[in-house]
Image 1 (tube, helix red, strand yellow):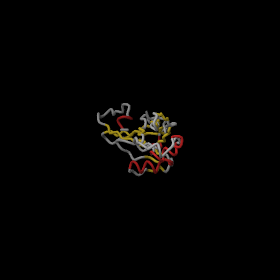
Image 2: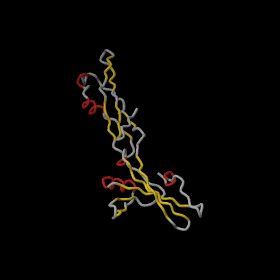
Image 3: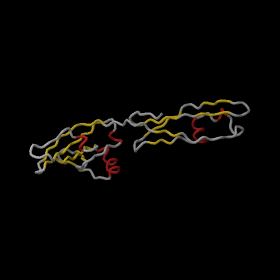
Image 4: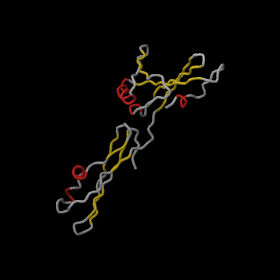
Length: 174
């Protein structure tokens, strides 16, 4: 998020030019993740005991912030070097669903396995693999629905497996 996206019309009566910067509070529980992902060192405000990101033109939100309100501060600096700041609470939402990719299709000899033996989810995962889930940085879980067997006679058939990924915000893959 940029300082300009946070700004709601800051101005200076003596000059048209103002510089905008933003910083945010990072909860102690999110500190290590934030520093690792953003490659920055957080600053401890000894009076409040809060950790802040450094003042910058942009700031980042991380998985640890999802569905939480984060304090964002806007610093305004005029041409003469005078400063003022304001803050607001920002609710961080992840609206992008994860992507779930099923394992590749495979063919097996039905004489090696009985259909009833491979309908178990654990055995299906061992024989055919598990899905890949694509989601930026945030933990995402996947679920497997019960497999469906279509019998085509003559020891031939089709086994269909379906998966879905669900992220921390409850977004679901197609």
